[in-house]
Image 1 (cartoon, helix red, strand yellow):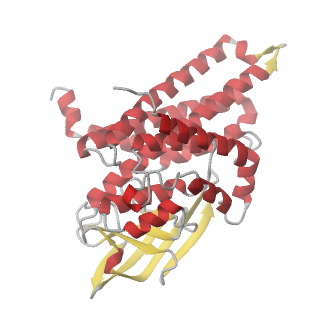
Image 2 (cartoon, one colour):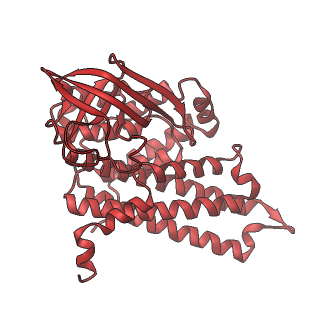
Image 3 (cartoon, rainbow, N blue to C red):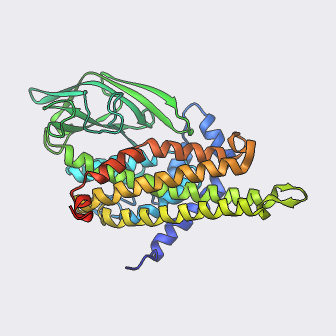
Length: 384
C-alpha cells in the first residue's frame, strides 16, 4: 500500500501551515482565547477561503468530497497550531448530515463557511457511552418535542445549529430508539450556557425545555439513529487522532529545541544521555501513534464511513494507542521542561492541555480498549 500523501493533500497541508505561521501565532491565539467570543470570525473566514470547510462536503453540495486521509493532513496542521475555531465540531456535524442524508442545503452552507455546527450528544451521566441518553423526543402531531440536557457541547454557543441525540424509545442505554435532530441554536426553548474549557476551547451546557421542531429537523428515520451516530462518532474520533498527531509533533519539536538551548554545567542538557533516551522513547510513541492513525484513516474509507466492523476495530485501536502516546509524550515533555513546562507562558503547557482534552473526547483510552476487546474479531485473533 502506498502511504505517501498525494500532491493535493500536501498542498492543503502547506496552505494550512503557512496560514498558521502568518495569522495564527501563539500570541494571536492567546488574544482569541481571551476575547468574549473565544473564537475569531477572521480565522473562520480564512479557513473557508482555504477550502477547509468544503473539504469533506460532497461535490453535489459544493465541496471536494475529501476522504479521511485528506482530513488527516488538515487536522494535523490545526493541532500543530492549536487552532481553537469550531472546525472539529462542524466537521463532525457535517458527517452526521452526510450519513443521514437529505440535508443538502445545510451542507452547502457548511462548505461555504456560512454555517457552524455543534453536536449535542453527551450527557452528565453518559460519560463515554453515546447510547446513554435521557433527553427525550416524542412525536407531537407533525412535530417532535425535545426535553432534556446535554453537557460539554463543544462550541455550542458559537454554532448556528445544533445536532441533538434524543431517546424516542427503549431504555436509557439501549441503542435502539435513538433519534437525531438538527435545529437552529436560537430555537425557542433552547438555553445555552457557554464556558471556556481547560485547553482554551469553548463548550456549553444545553437545556431543551419542551422544544418543538418540525419533521424536517429529523435526521434519518425516527428511532433508528444509532448506526449513523456510531459511524459519525468513529469519524470524529479519527479526526481527534489526526489532530493529536500534530499536537504531539509540535510538542516533541518544542521539547527538543528546549533541550538544545537550556544549559546546565556549561553544556546543553540535550547532551545528557538519560534525556536523550527519553526523547527517543517519545519519538517511538509518536511514530506508533502515527501508524495507528493512518490505519484508522484508511479503514474509515473514502466517504468517512468504511465497513462497520473494520471501522470500529481500527478506530478503537487508534484512539487507544494515540491516547497512550499523548499521555507519555505530554508528561515527558512537561518534565523535560522543568517547572516552565506547566506555565502558560510556554506553548508546551497548552499542547499538554489540548492532548488531555482530546483524550477525554469521544471516549478515552480505557473506553476504546474495552470497545476493541468487545469486537468479535478479537476472540478470533486469540484463537477462541
